[in-house]
Amino acid sequence: MAKVLLVDDAAFMRMRTARLLTEQGHEVVEASNGREAVDVYIDQRPDAVLMDITMPEMDGIEALKAIRLLDPDARVAMLTAMGQQSIVIEAIRAGARDFVVKPFEKDRVLAAVHKLLGG
Image (tube, rainbow, N blue to C red):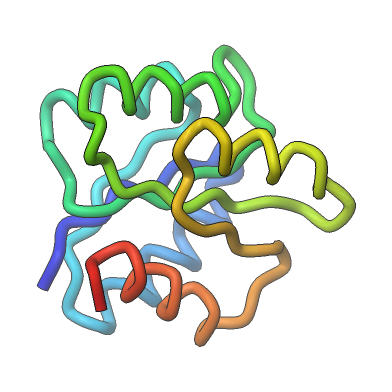
């Protein structure tokens, strides 16, 4: 299957989402903030990225912009809390291809990954 970069500062969210993705046959690499996400993206070149918006050091929007500068074809979906609609619009303008509202349903996460992978 695909290599997915999972970016979230909450370890339990990474663990929960990583388990879901690995159960579907995906390889998961992780980062705990935006700055780390950019480094992992450069090193691992994942097929898709699921990235939280609100994180320390570098938020998801800035990391999205940095990744898209490195790879204009990067496939990124944002993970967002309820009530962040204006930020979601900014993320889409910056190149995000989808977004998933937290707390999320398993099927919605899988649908976002499927969409990112061109399915």
